[in-house]
Length: 122
Image (cartoon, rainbow, N blue to C red; front, side):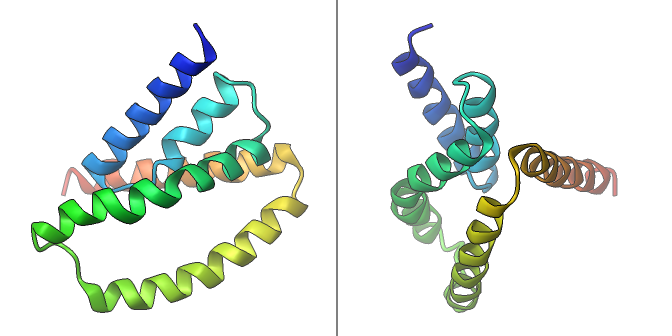
């Protein structure tokens, strides 16, 4: 498949699922970039972060705000702490070798999936 078409598919799928279930598209974009596009874990994570700046910041937020589903007080608190955490997370990620970073990424995905699966039976 043409790389441009593959990227269009990945972006559309990530945006659709991210907007649908409220996750950062990185959980979708990063694995696709690594496995389908052959990127390193570091490059995939950096590309994903840069990709998510505009769409998540404006379009999805607009829809949720219009429906009254945003707590702006929480947004302020979370945004400030998220910026601090993401800076240090990025610095840390660049110091970790690719194999370890893939394991950490996969472990976090498994934990999140297991928790959501478990909670769906409550």
